[in-house]
Length: 331
Image 1 (cartoon, one colour):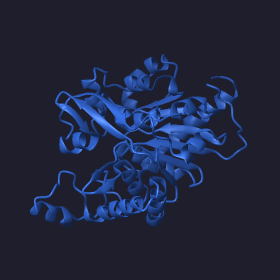
Image 2 (image 1 turned 30 degrees about the vertical axis):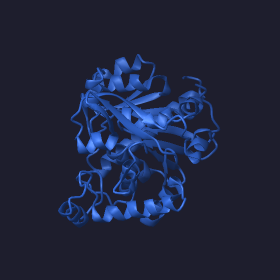
Image 3 (image 1 turned 135 degrees about the vertical axis):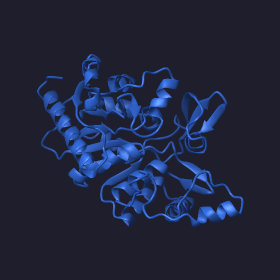
Image 4 (image 1 turned 90 degrees about the horizontal axis):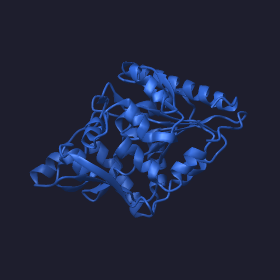
């Protein structure tokens, strides 16, 4: 990978995020970077239509987190939520397996209304962020429909059917992303990937298979990331053999992939320049180094806002180190 750049230009950071885990690091980055420095791209392959509304779970989790409106106990949804609409739906025999809070419903109503009027998902996301006071740039990975399909022994499931309705119980046999071949990356994202101003690409600690892979499989994205002068760094979502949030470790076991940070690093492969792993996995550092990656060992479990900020600061410092080393011709 050609790692040269114009170091006199302002640093810009790109973060790729899924839902809860990614949103935590995205918030930490937003606390230490100015709005003009940080762009967050969220997975939209989890999006689906429910009750006639377009739901964008990962976009909304990141947006609510950046706006400091999220339910901090659950990690998703809004704080101080009420559920009267769902209770009424239940009384009427309606579909309630995917529960939408009363305040959260307003987001989906506005999004669906604007999409029906011909607005793009990008423009709707920008509008919602503005209304909620989010200053940093949040983009969907694409304005085109891409939908994760989960292969199980009992047949295919849409991702939210697997994740919420079935509570991740079915053993997974694989995934594919319907619509991915014809979808186009969100234009601002692609422009940033090709910009000389880009100083780092950070893959947040999100599920590699169903949160990050859809972004990487969009046409042009992987090639643009590999061609970028900016170092690509992933933060492991697996700590001591467990997923901090979500079914990543369960999926890895069912796909006959070791549930380890090393396996995550190997899965991303030559896309990466650096890999961040938790202190509890320090014994894995040597084998990850042998994959040809620079490594950094820091606490990665983010329980508090300070944890998020500390991890963001450590990742940015690591990116600076890799960038400086590349300029010096050491990598």
